[in-house]
Image (cartoon, rainbow, N blue to C red; front, top):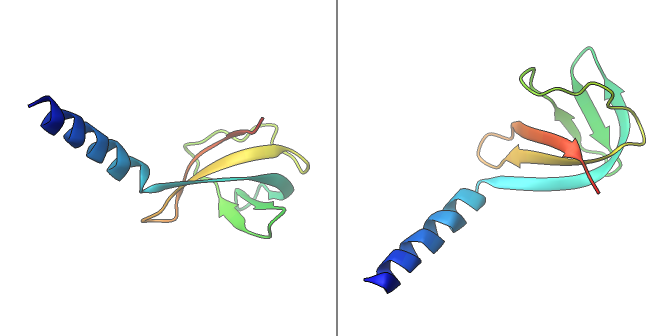
Length: 80
């Protein structure tokens, strides 16, 4: 019984993690009009209005979490 429970919990954790990707980089540019940022790898991400981006500027190191199924940004935070 414990093996089944442990396997189920591990599977659910894996499934939840499989749908989110984290990207780290340095912000190259910020466009407040479109709420988009471009990272040093050249990729541009649109930040939804539900997330605060006050003080986000070029040169900031960030971690962006993106939903793999929709491509939507779900979180953005300072990277360490």
